[in-house]
Image (tube, rainbow, N blue to C red; front, side, top):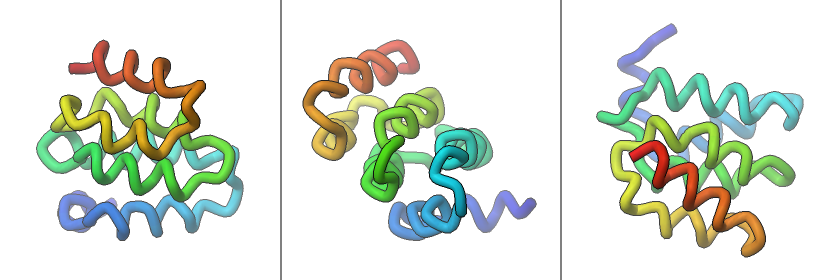
Length: 99
């Protein structure tokens, strides 16, 4: 574990880390753990939006799992653009509850 390395990840790099998870079913749990380790001081909605775009099947679940750790929950619109229209209310609610 290297917290300093996590702090330095930009959104694209975080997305690449998540895309390296071999089983897409595990991506949500890994995303949540990464978000927890990064914390509100480093994790932004831009990070989350990029990871959502990485996941073919679990983007909404990833966004919801990472929501409590977002340092800028007011920027949720960046994420909403990356999820299916029918999931936007669920994602918006997760960011409202976590802020």
